[in-house]
Structures are given as structure tokens and as C-alpha cells.
Amino acid sequence: MIVPVILSGGAGTRLWPLSRELYPKQLLPLVGDRTMLQDTALRLSGLANRNAPLVVCNEAHRFMVAEQLRQSGQEASAVILEPVGRNTAPAVAVAALSTMEQGEDHVLLVLPADHVIKNAKALCKAVNDGLGAVEEGALLTFGIVPTAPETGYGYIRRGAKQEVRSAKPGHEIYPVQEFVEKPALATAEEYLDSGNYYWNSGMFMFKASAYLAELEKHAPEILSASRKAWQGRVSDLDFIRLDGEAFAACPSESIDYAVMEKTAQAMVIPLDAGWSDVGSWAALWEVGEADTQGNVCFGDVIDVDCNGSYLHGGSRLVAGVGLQDTVVVETSDAVLVVAKDRVQDVKQVVEHLKSSEREEHLLHRRVNRPWGAYEGLDSGDGFLVKRITVNPGASLSLQRHKHRAEHWIVVRGIADVTCENVVQTLVANQSFYIPIGQMHRLSNPGETILEIIEVQTGELLSEDDIERFDDVYGR
Image 1: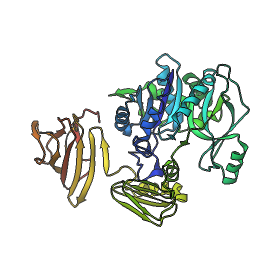
Image 2: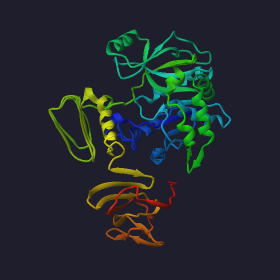
Image 3: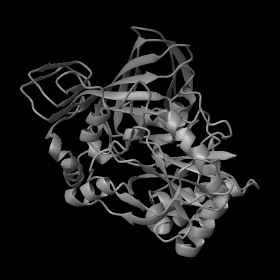
Image 4: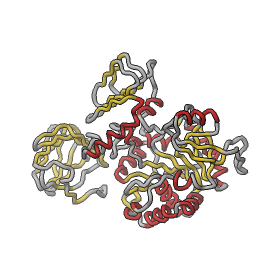
């Protein structure tokens, strides 16, 4: 049985301002109607012998991950929460330990949640073709057949073709001769001409026991810390929380560095499936549907005499005139304008935001919560205005504030407002006032979205000014 292991822990800083630390690129619909996480789960539907996916994600993203999987009809077998990011080697280790504990040595298909693969059938075929090698103990990686001398990817050099006894005839599989770091352009051109190199996709397949054995041989400290973190886990609703102290003590290393570059069991299978890791705005432009002038446009966009550009309107009209190879991305709180050949430097903007202690690297004005979302509309000296949407049947925590009062106006839907143990039902155009220090809760008893406008007044208007007494989401 194949267990897909979806790694959803990245931050995607090079796709700022769409991708934020608390709302990263894998949770965004960047190349279609579905998010990248949803596409990753759904592209495996062609595999007949697969189990439900196991997802490893940042604990701050847990409710968004669970909800997006639910919306796509892909229920996870488990969602393991990382208290801190420790790269892919420990993440896959805890996934392997979780499957081994069930008493079966499953094949793990490790897939990052933020990749584009246009030809899902080609991926499924490569998985099936590689199963024989995996059953014989190989640690298999998927090498992307290169289409250009790309300098932004690592490469894999293959050895002589190797037949696998249990595989069907006609498959292509090679031992890995070498993993190569991102090359200079001239070197990348040589790699392309030779035909012996593939792009390193960061996708893997191996038996759980084989990976753990190689990890113990080449990076025992990672296995030890991962095992302690798994043994100290606790269940939280539908999630599995790793032991925070043990996992934080784990070295941060990728599978490539920890295992694949050192093991003698590494093999590579070629994959030509329209793959991209969407690591920059230029990469997103490459996988998008361009018009006759080579422009890729999303949202409310007008382009006049633009060529080879990426224009993204999020909350308002974006108009471009005479742009050449330029990226313009607009959100409700930020606008990015960057030359397409400088998109790798967007991470410097994120670093500047962090060092300046600004919040634009963390989240958007619209902030998702397990019960719905809120969006900042306006603020000034002593006041803050938000739009709050609450999903049908959902409730905010029972809470109070020491420094602010709140005034709620129902725009649409039905609201149950609890204040000091008294419940009142409100409908559109009705309002309620909550004085400082009074215990309160907002719930949606209806079957449609509840939308309210919240006006906060007080000396301290911060998300830190929340004292929770009861919360169905365990916060």
C-alpha cells in the first residue's frame, strides 16, 4: 500500500505579498481554482493502491489544511503538526514512524504541497514504474527531465541504467551518481546537452523501514530526536501534536543532505510531467496561461502594450502600460513591482519587513480562523473596524478583553450573542454593545454565512488582549 506523505510546512517568502508566513503559497489558489495543497492531494486519484494521505504541516496552519482537504473531498489519514520547522528529513521521519506503529511497512510517497504538475497521469505512471525498485530497498527520487539550462534548481546525475527484477519491462531507472547544487549557466547548459542530468524535484518514494534504516545510519541524531518527538505526541481534535521540546532539539536538514547524498540505495526515475516548484514569480509566470503578448493576468487587470509580464490584481483594478518583463502583484495591504529577472530578491523585502517588526510578512488583512475569518477595514486613534465572517454552525471562543469594548452590527445572517451568560439572537441591521471586561461569545446558528461589522474602541486594540475561557478549537 502506498501512503502519500504531503509536506505542507513551507513559508514561500519569494511569492510575497500573496504568500505570507501564516498563509503560505501551498494554501493559495495560484494556478487555478484549487489551492496547491488540494491539487497535490487530488493528483494522486489515479493511483489504485494508495491510502489516504498523511499530512505534515505547521501547527499554525492546521485548521486551514484540514478545511481545504475537507473541501476537496480528500480526508487525511493523519495530520501531524510541527511545533517548529525542521526541514524535510525530520518531517518524513515522524511520518515513517507513524506508519510503522500501525504494524505495516508501507511505501511512502513524499510530495511537497507547493508543486505544480500538469500531467498527473505521468506522475502516477512513474510511481507505478518505480514500485519494483522500492520493494527491493531503493530510496527513489523523481528526476525532472530538464527543458532548459535552469540555474535555480539542483540537479541529479544518473548512472548506468539498472534493471529491477520485480519491475515490468521497459521502465527507466538509474542509480544516483551525484546530487549537484544549483549550477552556473554554462554548467547548466553542459548538463542539458549531456542528457545525464535531471532537475532535483524534492519528491521521493521508499518503504518506511528503508528510510528509517538509512536515517539511523547517516543521521542518527535526527532519528533519535524525531522518535522522541513522536513518542511524546498528544492528540488534539483531529490532529497529532509532536512533543515540542524534542522536535525543537532536532537538527534541521533536508532529506537530500541527511540521507540521499550519502546512501548507496539512492535511485532516480525520470519524470516528464510539466513540473514546477513555483519558487518565484517568474516560475509562476512560466506555468500560467499567457496571452498573445506573453502576459499572464489574474484578477481585475488592464494591460496596454505590455509584454512578458505577470499582473495580479487582488482587491482592486490593476492597470499596466508599456511594461516589459515585469511582475506586479497587488493585495489589500501591499503592492509588489519587480523586474522578472530580479524576482529571487523578493525575499529581501520579507527580511526587511521582519527586521522592521512590521506584520505584512506574517498575514494579510484578511486572517483565516477555524470559525471563519476577519478583515481589517479601518483604524485610527482609539478605534479599529473589522469585517467578521462566521461559518454556519461555528462559534468564536468565550472570551473577554481588559482594554477594549466592542460594538457588533449584523450585516447578514443570524447571530447568537452571549454576554455575561445571557444569549440574544440578532438578525441583519441589529447591533449589540459589549463593554470592557464582560465575558462574551459570537456564534452562527444559521445555515448561511454570518457577516458582522465589529467596531473596537479603547486604549489597546490588539489580538493579544484576549482572555479565553472556552474554545471548541483548543486554542
